Image (cartoon, rainbow, N blue to C red; front, side, top):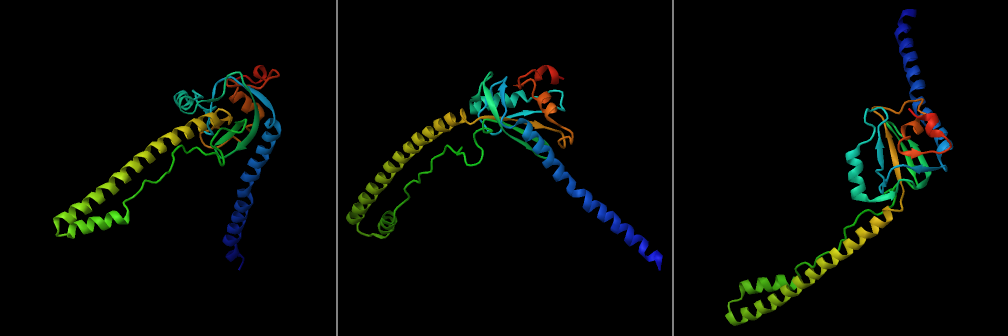
Length: 233
């Protein structure tokens, strides 16, 4: 009788071990994030490079031979403008640990977060063909009298010309308002802060602490107080 319970008990023990061990990753990450938040958030630092005005920020790869994607960095500066210039001070407003990256946000983290409106298009509908136009088209098609048909055609042409003029005016207004929104978003990007994304090949190392963050960002951020010499790699 005892033999019947060997496999079930072993399986139960294995499942119990997995169930106990599986949830530990989330608390571990939460605890590490809390430690990083306490250390960095609210602290003022100085950026050593121009920072693009976008929530996409600057990607840094501490595990790679080339830790900065220069091409994308250059394109983002050109596309979004500069929110923080080299030599500017900024407040660390958020440190967020995710599966394979750590977000290091400065002065709000960059325009485009939460409810920021990044859409520069203006939606003003064009005037569609009216029911009167459709009715005239049907009547012209079925009208046998030539003179009467010409009268209907004149009325239809007047309605079409009016609609075309109005739609042309709407298109001009769309362009004007879109340009205004684009300029407004660009200005807001200059005051929305930015961020660094410290990215890893797979997962954030479990022992990646404040000194590691400062070492990863050492070339791009001055933490002050001699941190550069102490944590330089």
